[in-house]
Length: 338
Image (cartoon, rainbow, N blue to C red):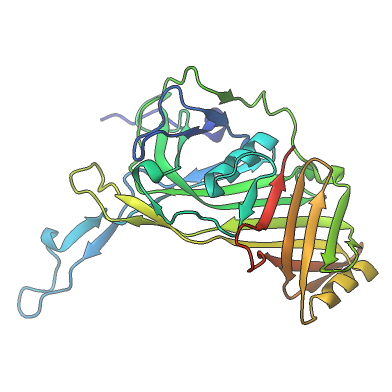
């Protein structure tokens, strides 16, 4: 065969997240969908697998490996997709919906979540991630990853980087083989890039506070922050009759929510860090511009550090988000977008 002139670039590939109706089947043509404002992305190569190799036989004639001793491991593979995107209200809401099931501002993660750990059939809430013109098999052909589960979402901002735009990073996994075919979307709810005309920005933030339980708020000068919500997703079983040893379902774990903020080192930051060393170190963390807001009502500050920068010393304050053990329906963290 002749060398192919086909190639793909990130500039020509649009990325959509579409809602599925059937576990293991890519989104239908009329599915609700959003064009993600991605700045970069990655996905596992198609037909991705490792090789399992049997041990050498003992005795004469056992020094090499026959074809019967090497098999492709397809029963446990998971494809991984990572999206880096600009923080529009719609994109943040959609990823929150995929990760913990609340896709309407203020996007609240409760202590009682996840409500179920077994994901299959009608209990599933996965998505199809669609890369327009992402397939290498033919020109202008899409690549779809069906029944993707979100494993982590990081939202971050740096006043000195990315024009101050607040950014998102989401990771998804699926045990289903990618599909190399276009979806002719029509009808249904479609959120285009044009619909996402605004992005949250660090320069618009009006208040960043840490409030000790029963105390007054410490008003901080914020340079950067990061919030990460993560959970484990493991595939269950395999169907040898299905293409690519498709999984029978997923098992999801609990949520780990951590964050960090870099602030001017002053009396306010010192008071917050000092309080964290008390016997009852629970505090409320808040970052807001009046519309966009991150709130962790039961945060606990971890070991802090100092950046000895030329423009002034800065305190790096990591924290872990928890909920009141007396009531699992209490908020772990909320992310408001409207």
